[in-house]
Image (cartoon, rainbow, N blue to C red; front, side):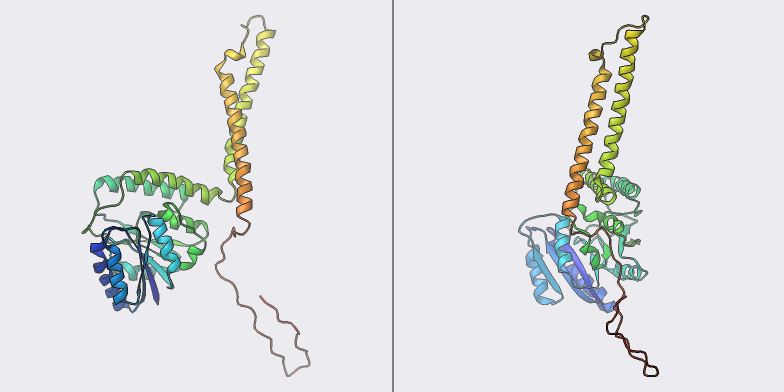
Length: 338
C-alpha cells in the first residue's frame, strides 16, 4: 500500500525529525510505502530548512512552502492536492498525535469507511481547552447529525476521492467528516492515544471557539441548504410576513371596532408600538424573501457545472460478445454498455 501522510507545519522545527523517524518506523514494521508531504504554513523558526533536509535524505518526503501563514485548512488543501497514495493520513506536527496509531486507522478503513476520525479520549491539555472543546463537539454532533466525540482531532484518515467533492477554505478543516457525510461518504471514529506536548505551544486561543461556532453555522447551512437556500430564508420570511400580517389584521379590527362601538376609546394606530413591530416584521420578511431569491439565482448560476450527487462506483462497460459457432444467430453489429 502506498500511504500518503499530510502534515501541516507552523513553527515546528524541533519536532519534525522525531515525527519523521516515528512514521518511518511504523511504515517499516507494517510494510507501507510512504508518501509524506510536509506543508510549511509560513513558519519562521527554520522548519523549512528541516523539511528540505528530510526531503533531500528521503525520496518519500516532499515539502510545500507557503509565502506566509494561510491557515491549517489551506495547508491541508495544498497537501491533499499533492498526495499520490491510496489512503491519506493527516497528523499534527507537534508530536501529540502518535504515528503508532496509523495501522488501527487503516484497519478501520478496511471495514468500509471513507473517513476515520481520531478521538483523544484521554487528553493532555489544560482544562480551559478541554471543557469548551467538549461543548463544541456536542454542538457539532447535535446540529449536523455526525456523532463524533472529537471533531477537532487532527489525526484522521481519508480516501482521496473525498477531496474531489469537498472543498476546504477558511477554517473548515475540522468539519471535513461532516462535509463528507453530507455527500454520502461513510464516517467512523476510533479512540487514540494523545501524548503530552513536548515542544512549542498551542496555536489556538479563545478566538478559536468563537470562529468555530460561526464556522459551524456555515457548515450547517452548506450541508442542509447549500443547494436550496430559499428553503431556509423563505421559511423565515414567511414566518415574519405571517406574524406581521396577523398583527396588522388585529390592529385593523381594533381600529374599526373603536369607531363603531361607543363604549370603546378611539384607537390611534400611529401611537401604537404594535404597528411598528408589524411593519418591521413585514419588511424583514420581504427582505428575507428577496435575499433567498438572490441566493437561489447565485446557486443556480454557479452550480451549473457542479454535481449535486456523489457516485460511489460505476459498472465496467460490457465486453465484446462472441458469436456462438453452434448456431446460426448472427453477431450484433454494435456493443452495448451497462
